[in-house]
Image 1 (spheres, one colour):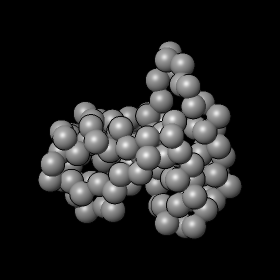
Image 2 (cartoon, rainbow, N blue to C red; image 1 turned 45 degrees about the vertical axis):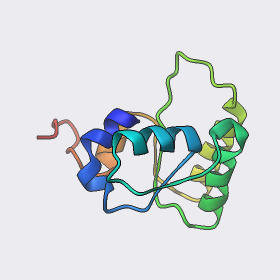
Image 3 (tube, rainbow, N blue to C red; image 1 turned 90 degrees about the vertical axis):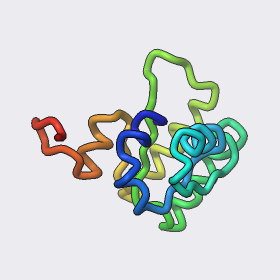
Image 4 (cartoon, rainbow, N blue to C red; image 1 turned 120 degrees about the horizontal axis):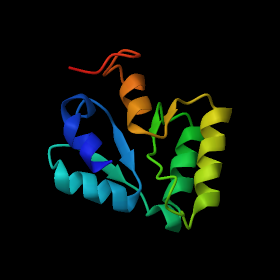
Length: 113
């Protein structure tokens, strides 16, 4: 997530960014020019806070990069977040390629410049 934010900070600077605590802290450290509303850490309820914002229609897009080879201790919370994104029809990117496509940073099948 940090590398993605660093690579696309100009685009992200125009967004109201919300992140779980740990991820938000890492992105803020790498990109101090971005304003990020940090919630609780994911396992401590941050994923649920984001889910509540989705239900309140306060989130337009979710980027949640998942490493399929690493177990997530809060897997149930992540699945609940995904379910809410589906229920409320919120675009959700689970990998870098999808995030770039949703943000319009590359055309399908063509690498970004």
